[in-house]
Image 1 (cartoon, one colour):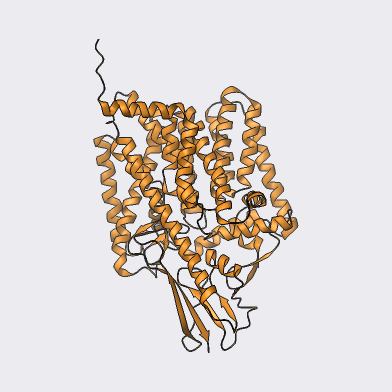
Image 2 (tube, rainbow, N blue to C red; image 1 turned 45 degrees about the vertical axis):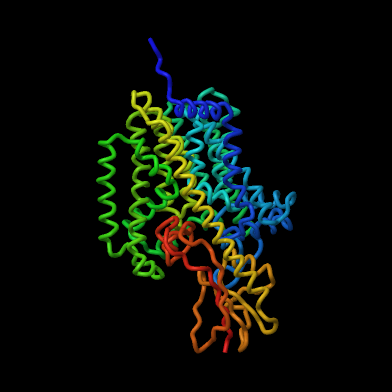
Amino acid sequence: MVVPTPSPGRARLNRIRHWLARHPYGTLAVVVVALLAPFLSKPFNIDDPLFIWAARQIHAHPLDPYGFKVEWGWTQFPMWKVTENPPLACYYLALAAAGLGWSEAALHFAFLLPALAVAWGTYRLACRLCRQPLLAALAAVFTPVFLVSGTTVMCDMLMLAFWVWAMEFWLEGAETGNARRLWGAAGLMTLGALTKYYGACLIPLLAVYSAANRQRFKSWGACLLLPLAALWAYQCATEARYGTSLLYGAADYAQFSKGFFGFSPLTTSLTALAFMGGGLAVVLFSMPWLWRPRQLSILAGLAVLITTVVFLDQSLLQKYHSLPAARALAVKFQMSFWAVGGVGLLALAVADLLRRRDAPALLLALWVAGTFTFAGFVNWTINARSILPLAPAVGILLARRRDQIELAGGRIRAGVPAGCLAASVALSVLVARADFLLAHAVRQCAREIRVDMEPGGTMFFQGHWGFQYYLQGAGVSPFDVKLSALKPGSRLIIPSNNTNVLPLKPEKAGLQQTFTAAGPRLLTTWSQPVGAGFYSSAWGPLPFAFGEVPDESVSVFVLK
C-alpha cells in the first residue's frame, strides 16, 4: 500500500504541531508572556485600587485586611462594606509588593504567574479529557476575557488558577485512588473560595462528578469538608472582626443590585449570551469546522431568531439612557452577533454530553451551565470577569469536538483550526489593547489636572476607579457629601466616564476648564455611549463594542 506524500504546506504544519506538542509548557509560557508582557505598564483602573488599598492595609495590619475606610459612593464607607470579595488576592498583592514594589509593572508582573498557572493547568486537565491538550490550552488563552483579565490585578485570574489545578488534582486522585491528591484538591478549592466566592462552586461540581463516576463517597466526601469548614471559619472571623458576615453581605448585595438595575429576564438572557459569545469569541470563529452543514443550518436559524428578537424588542436598550439613538442599531447588531456565539457554546457543551454520556462530559456541561447561570442570573451584574472561569472549559470542549470529528472519519481542512485561533487571538489582543488605552487615558486626565491646575482654593473630585487612585494619590481630596466643606471658589472635578457622579446645577457652579485624553478609537471595553460594559452590563450590554469612541474627558467646575 502506497502512503500518499503530504503536500509541503501540510508537512510543514505537521512539523510545527509535533514540535509544539513536545514542548507544551514552554510553548504556553512563551505565548502567555508574549501576549501579556506588552501590557505590564497598564495603569490601574476599575476595581484594581480596591485590591491595592487592601494590600497596603495588610502590610500595616496583616490580620485586619478590611479595617479601614474608603471613599466609594459620595461618602466614606468601611472597606468591608465596599468590597465583595474575600482577601486572598490582596494578600498575594501584599506579598508581591513586598518584594517588587507597588508600581504598575511590578504588580502586573506578579500576576503573570496566575495567568501561566491557568494555561498550564488547562493543559494538564485537558490531557485527561481530550487528545489534543495543547489546542485546548491555546484556545482558552486566545480569548478576550483571558487577555483582559490577565492585565488586571483583581482576583479573577488567581481564583481560576486555583480552580483548574484543584480540578486536575481531584480528577487524578479519583482516577488513581490517591488520597493526597484529593486532599490537595480540597486545599486548592479552599484557596480558590477565599480568593473569590465563586470558587466555592467547585465543591458541588466535583461532588456531582465523583457521584456520576460511581466513586465511593467515603473516598472523597471528607475532603470537601475542608473548603466548607474554611468558609464557615471565614464567616465567623469576619463577623467577629467587622460585626457582619462578609459572605452573606456579598449575597445580599447581589440580590439588591439585581432589583436595582431591574433588567427583564429576556434582556438579561441576551446580554449574558452576548458576554459569553464575545468574551469567548474563539467558539464563534471555530463554528465552520465545529459543525456539519445540517447543524450549521440549525444554528443559522437560531441566529435569525435571536436577531429578530433583539431588533424587535423595544425595551432591550431602554435602561441605557446614555446610549445615543443613532448607536442603537450598531449595538443591536453586535449583540445579536455575539449572542449567537453564546448559543454555540451552550450547544457545544450539550452536544458533547449527549454523545459521550460520561462523567467528564457531565462535568464540562455543568461547568458551562453553572457559570452561565451565575454570571447571568445570580451575580450582581453581568460582566466578563464572571465569564472567565469558562475559558478552560471552552478550550477543552473545542479539542474534544475535534477528537470526535477525527475519530468518526471526518476531515478538517489543514490550517482551518489554526486560522480560527489566529482570528480569535487577533481580536483578543485588540480588545486588551483597547482596555489598556482606556486605563492610560484615565491616568493621563488625572495627571494633567495635577500639573495644570493653578494653586489656591479648595479642590475636590468625584468618581472612582483608576481616576480616584491617581488623583487621590496626587493629594486631591475626594468629594464627600458629609465631610467636604464646599464654599464659593471651591473647585469640583468631574470625569465623564465614571460612576457615582452627582451633576451640578448651572446656578451653583460654572465650568472652568475641561481636560481630555485620547483613549481607544474604534473599539472599547468601557463606554456608555458605545454600549461597552466589560466590567458591568449596567454600563453597556456588550463586553466590548466597535464604534466611534469618545475621548476621556474631565471637567473642572468652580462653585459660585
